[in-house]
Structures are given as structure tokens and as C-alpha cells.
Amino acid sequence: MPIKFIQFGEGNFLRAYIDWQIDLLNERVGLNAGVVVVRPRGHTVKPLLDVQDGLFTTLIQGLDENGEAVKQYRKISCVQREINAVTMFADYLALARNPDTRFVVSNTTEAGIVTNDTDAYADAPPLSFPAKLTRLLYERFLHFDGAQDKGWVFLPCELIDHNGPALKAAVLHFATLWQLGERFIDWLEQANTFCSTLVDRIVSGFPENQMADIEAELGYKDQFFVVAEYYYVLVIQGPSWLADELRLADAGLNIKLVDDIAPYKQIKVGILNGGHTTLVPVALLAGLTSVSEAVNDPDIGGFLIAALEQEIIPALPMPLDELTQFADDVLRRFRNPTIHHRLEAIALNSWPKFAARVMPQLTGFHTLTGKLPKRLILALASTLLLYRGDVITLSDDAATLAWFQAAWLRVQSGQGEIEELVSQWLANSSLWGSDLNQIAGLSDAVLGAIVAIERDGIRSTINAI
Image (cartoon, rainbow, N blue to C red; front, side):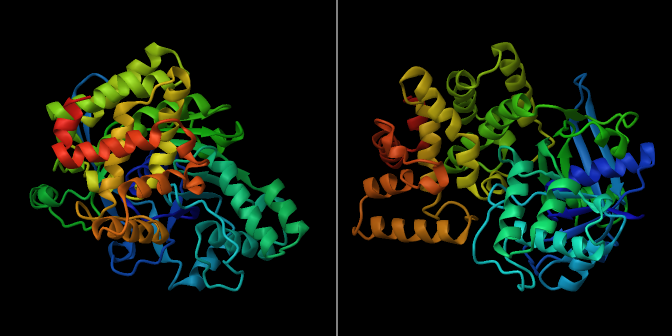
């Protein structure tokens, strides 16, 4: 198939979400869109999708709109190849010269759309995702001599506010830093379309404990097999002509093209993603391993329900009935017994997630009520304890991991106090957007939660709220 999509990210989510939808568009409306997956970080341990000719299988399961159990296998065939941007840089740049490419999809986590002043044009490739993308765009601009019909449509899936404008601003940063010229900047502005998106599907990944039975049922092995829930929605804030380009009218997919994504975003990020990020550190400290196990646990599940009802929903500025209905749907999805969504996988890059998903509700609750939300503070304290490094294998940016390693080492060696650790982390304005120590009583509340967890255990601390 002609390569119409460039996809930054080879992970489970994009494969069981974006690639799954593209595959259905190909089948149902003849979109005839091939995908090239770009591995932006250059990991070499995991093999490329090319070892299976780009093919992989999804298992979609859960409860449908009528409460009926669903189990659907689908072999995804839209991926044409995978490119390692680090080891295959020439192949990566060649994507820009392909006249068929039209859409760029990305999921580089909340920490992916960032800028710096150190990535250079001559780097092969630059380190950050936006810098890599700017280099690719400039290659396209040069090859097609700034043709207006050779711009791209960007559908970033990172869970940050206004992800389309954020990605555009990051690309313009590097275009300016590298002095690529006003003509290129004009082409970026006029020929390219940066859409904001909201993505929603729980993708639990590779079901290692079930693979023997699945392989027996399918009759083949698939090292890229991925499991996702039945529910999904893709909301795109973009121009109306995009519906025609993607042939959405007759596709029967839950893709919404809207003028304003904000209401969808607030509900989803606050309740679904915020619920996940609130639940995960507490459940991990309780020794649990999956979302369904945690939500069905009387203590941990009760903690999440109370956090949603009493602290998260009150801080969201939408009609109560809509928020309550969405929360009920989310809890039903979390309880899905067929999805083993590992808590440790959700804990990837916990701090950017906490800042984007939970902190707005924590501070919003305080602004509205003059009180501090005890359960969200407990989640914050639990995340700080996770970053001591003795519960799970941590994954975050190198600077964050190094900071916590040094800070907890000082505490454990008696050379520093937990109070200092808490205060310094709350003062991290680059993460939070401000010094959170300015919120009266917050530092003491977080410290008190840490002390209670250490003294009484997470379950007793929850039940004492």
C-alpha cells in the first residue's frame, strides 16, 4: 500500500489504537493507507516489526454497548515497515521525499513534545522528537521546493493540553534555532495542519501469561500480539475537509471531528487518565499488579471511587450528570476482567502524567473549597515513595531519576530529611508550572501522608481518611 501515515512510536498503544483504526478504514472505505513506523528512541533490544513483515494481531475484548461479551481477533496489515531513526537515518529522511505521505501520528508520552537548545541540525538524528520531526519536514520542504500541496496533517496522541499547537510550537522553535529561513517557516504555517486530538482506549499490551493458549487458538506465534479493550474513541479538533480525506462518513468508527476539543479533553484526562494516575502508586504500594485487581480490591477500589466522587469530579467544570456517567463507564472499563492492564506499565513517566492529569484537579479542588483533597495528596505521596526505587523498576527522564536517587539516598543515609525532599520537589516549577509550596499546608499534608504510609501501611492510611 502507498505510505500515507508516518507513525512516531512503535508501542502497544498506537498499534492497537491508531493502526487498528487505519486497518479498518482500509477495509471498510478503501483508504488504501500504508503506515511506516518510526522508532524514535532507537532501542535496539526489541526487534523491528519487519521481522513479521509488519504484521501483528490485536485481540479486542470486553463488554460492548449492550453489556455483551466481545472477543475479536484481527490481523493488522497496514504497517509496511519499521525504521529505527538512530540506526537507519538515511531511510528516515527518505520518508520526506515520498509524495504519498500525508499524515503524521505520534505518541512519545507527555515528556515527548519538548524543546531544547542543544539538538543540532547536523545531528543524525537529533535527540528530541520535535527536532527529529523538524529535520524531516525541512527535508520535505527542500525536496518539493516548498510545494503547498506537500504539507502534512499532524495527529499527535500525546496526553498534553493542545497537543497540536504544542507540537507546532516545538517545530517552529527548532526551525528558528537552526535558522532554516522565513520561507520554510511560512511553509510550516501555511501548508501543514497541526490538529489537537484526544485519544481513549485501554491497551494492556502483550498477555504473556495467556500466550500459550492464544497461540494454540490462532495456530501461529506473534511476538507483537497486543490486547486492548472494546471501547475506544478518537476526537480530532481539525478542519472539516479532514473527514473527506480520511473517508470517515461511511467508516462506522468512533472518530469525532470537532471544532472544540476542550470539553472532551477535560472529562477524559481528569477522570480516566487522572483515575489511572491516582490509582497506580497506591495500588503498587499495596502489592497489586493490575488495574482490574486494584479496582476490585475493597480498600484500593474504594479509595479510587471516593477520589473520583469527592475530589476529582467536583473540580471539573462540567455538568454533574455527564461527569458521573463517564466515571461509571470508566470504572466498568477498569473492572474488565479480560484486560490485564499492568500497573507498572501505566507508571511509565509518572511525573509528567501526574502534573497533567491529577494536579489540575488537586489545585482546582483547593481553589473551589479552600481544603486540600486528602486522597489526591495520598496519591502524590505514594508516587514520591515509588521513586525511592524499591517497589518497581522506574522509567522517567534521566534527570528526574538521578534527582530522586540522590534525594532518597540522602534521606536513607541520615544526611537529609524527607521534609526537604518534599519541599524541593513541590518547588519544581518546570514540572508543575509554579512553586506548589505556595499552597498553604500542601507540603505538610504530603509529608504527613508519607509518614502515615511508612508507619501504618497504605491500606490503614487509606481507611483512616
